[in-house]
Image 1 (cartoon, rainbow, N blue to C red):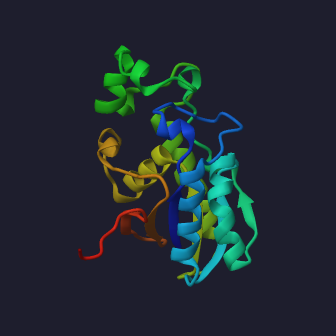
Image 2: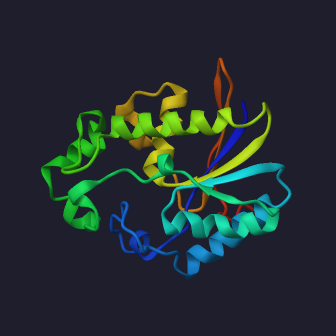
Length: 205
């Protein structure tokens, strides 16, 4: 089974302003997000990528485009990589959502949560795990592929493959334009790196 690079899309105005974009169409990368997409392409231009898969949402497609151009690869949208279905919460500000009783359970007991008019975290996790397994099955062992999608689904995938309780997945952090590496085989899954943030300056002063 291959190495999967799970890459969160870059910044957009919903992220910048603390608003839940969900599955809304027409949410595009802002200037910073476009710069992040270019930085991902620069970082991974020498990686031995065999394929690029994305959520069908514009912000994921736009983040993947510079890398696809650099590697001369076709972008393949996958419905299974869609953002969590937040239902009636979609489009709302995080500030307003924090005042709702359900918010406490979203943070402390997410396994008990169904978003009004949407899906549960358990349903989202199963969907993402099945999609990543399907993608992995398309490739030979030790091949590397990139999957561009969303924060909560990436956290849920990591929790699934590490055997973390679902109620602990919110302890993970996935920043915009970050890269998480996951190796999946028939018998074991290994986390190669988590939330590698290309915007961090780790050089010595």
